[in-house]
Picture 1 (spheres, rainbow, N blue to C red):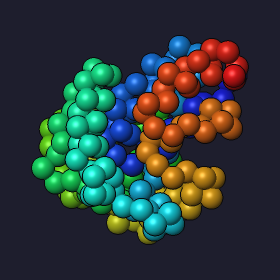
Picture 2 (picture 1 turned 30 degrees about the vertical axis):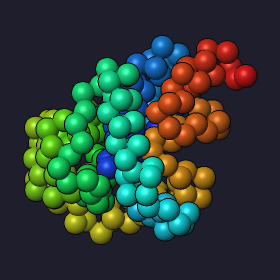
Picture 3 (picture 1 turned 180 degrees about the horizontal axis):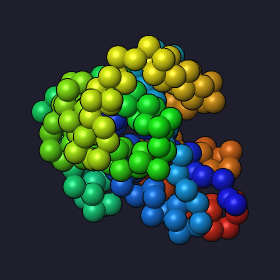
Picture 4 (picture 1 turned 180 degrees about the vertical axis):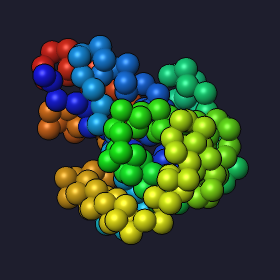
Length: 200
């Protein structure tokens, strides 16, 4: 059986959101699954010495146009949230916890959290809001809320983030196909061709 596509993402990343809406169909075309891996851009920024793209002089104004244009290009509904960026430890911990409970529910959970933030403008950095979104996606809301504060879940996310950085992950989305890394939603076409041809 073919290995799954590894999809690293941060819930505060609009490009990660756009990619999340496309990656499953792309993977399915090639008989692959998706391994959803939340990460924290804040931890990456500390390592590489950068900042959120929208706050970088000159690049910031461009990026806001590009985010909306990219969403339209990919036919993905998106509006820039009123609070942006946000800390994403809470929703990421819920995903890590859910992966240990029932990994088959993770895609539904990720999509619900992303859409809550980038479509419905709900602040998923708020633990209660993130747990409500999880509940509405068919996850145990009380358990999801408890997972955010669970030391073992916190440690698991930290290990995952450290492992991602150790593997070279520096942005969202960051996709790995059979060991080959691709950064950015604009690499989806390359990923598609790579899978079709077995590399190039």
